[in-house]
Image: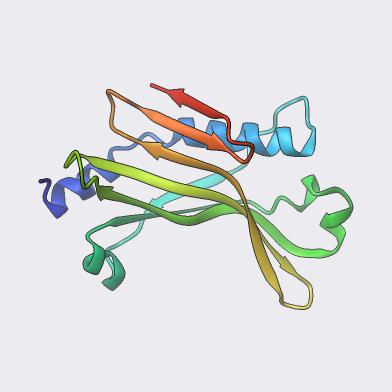
Amino acid sequence: MKTREELREFTESIDFTPLKTQINRAVNRAVGLYDEEDLDIKFVVRPENRRDEQNGSVSVDYESEDIRRFCGVFGTILKKATVTDFGSYSFIHPETGEPVYSTDVVIAYTHHDGGSNSMTLLRAWYFGKERGWEFKDAHGSITTFN
């Protein structure tokens, strides 16, 4: 069983470049862009908090720039739209005892009247340097990246 410090070190060592690449591909595919445009996305390993301590996880936050320019007619009725996480954390897999990073990538949006919602763009898992990344898009297609 890995210690909490080992889990934090695992999380801080993750190269998020493949995740960023898959996010960009998914956004570009979703809005029909043929010349891929890279979104500005910042990844931050969150300082420990009470929830992380209770469930033994290490959380990662990320959010893109505003993407309303990609949203066509919907961009005009939204106050803000970003690609962000809806649950993004590392944990110890109960069967293998190895660390795993998991995230749901969503497009989160806010209406001018204050209402908000999100939709899943893709899901991703990182299993360490040997096994690498696994991605599942909104259509159920799975891609691996080592």
